[in-house]
Amino acid sequence: MNRDIYDEDHDAFRETVRQLIDKEIVPHLPVWEEAGIVPRELFRKTADIGINGLQIPERFGGGGVESFRFNAVVLEENGFAAASLGGLQVHLSTVLPYFLELANEEQKERWFPGFADGTLVSSIAMTEPGTGSDLAGVATTARRDGDEYVLNGAKTFITGGINADLIVVVARTSNDESNRRKGLSLLVVESGMPGFTRGRNLDKMGLKAQDTAELSFEDVRVPVANLLGTEGEAFAALTSNLPQERLTIAVTAYATATAALNLAIDYVKERKAFGHRVADFQNTKFVLAECATELEAAEAMVDRAIIALDAGRLTPADAAKTKLFCTEVQARVIDKCLQLHGGYGYMREYPIARLYTDARVSRIFGGTSEVMKSVVSKSLGL
Image 1 (cartoon, rainbow, N blue to C red):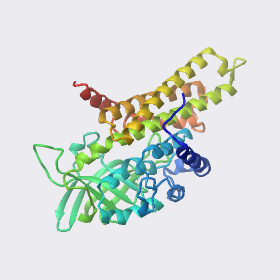
Image 2 (image 1 turned 90 degrees about the horizontal axis):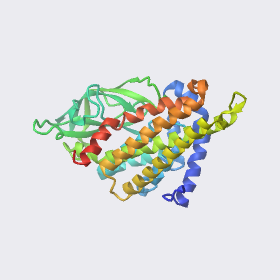
Image 3 (image 1 turned 135 degrees about the horizontal axis):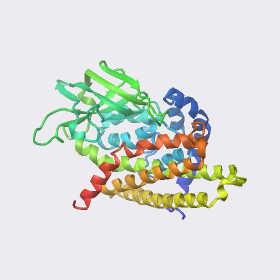
């Protein structure tokens, strides 16, 4: 079916993004995966074609785009190519919205030009060794001391945590025993602040080129000027941004599953078994037909969610439905497409193997599938 959510401007931007990915990313992926990180110069190259500054106001050197559609184009093309933008993807679609919504004028003047030209990249540190989906259980603390906060705690599984210049840290600045959601604040920690250390670049099963860090904060003095938003009110900001974060994961899931389908189609047309192309067997045709049908449904769901987000009416429940469905479809489709590759599908030199391991975390981060089901069930009055 034809998609109608993109216009000529989106198509032209898509072609530019595709060319960059084909030239500057895909050929280097094996090296980046071995290193466990993408080079910082990649962020300057993506900035050169406007990716980094899409939603940054024009007065700071950005594109001033309000629609999420251009972000979706970047996510899709990256997924279609089975590529990796490293932590930049999280910076653009997950972290930057906090700055756009909460930063004051002084902070915008200080940070937005760097976001737009690629010299600054951000990450967000929510998850702790003992706290995953339960944000209200954050144990990292920040004590006010004059014009500074004294930050102590540890974070883990932080995407982009090695490369990032600015880390938005979720910390508890006060305690309210009657409401655990109160008292959380967002503090922007900058590279080089004394007491801030980066631990291991974690060795993950998939997403090998995307740096994922352990972070430690020991009496880090963060200026009050680096408080993002209102002290003690971070929980509301975090939950309000969840729909876009979950849509971002859904778009990527749909796009990478589409890449798997295309890889499988190409492979079965060339591969022979028992004197016939694998594509000629009825089972192959039926499996790929099932995949194509599920992806059509996922695409329709993604498109509706993008339209709703742009209109300011993507609800937490609808975002949860979209992430749940698209990530489960991603798992089923990529698994079936790998199976059609036979033994070669298990070899990392084949992109389908990378897609398989990369996809597994989609049902975990941004809220597990079980959490998504809880959100949806609450919307049903259950």
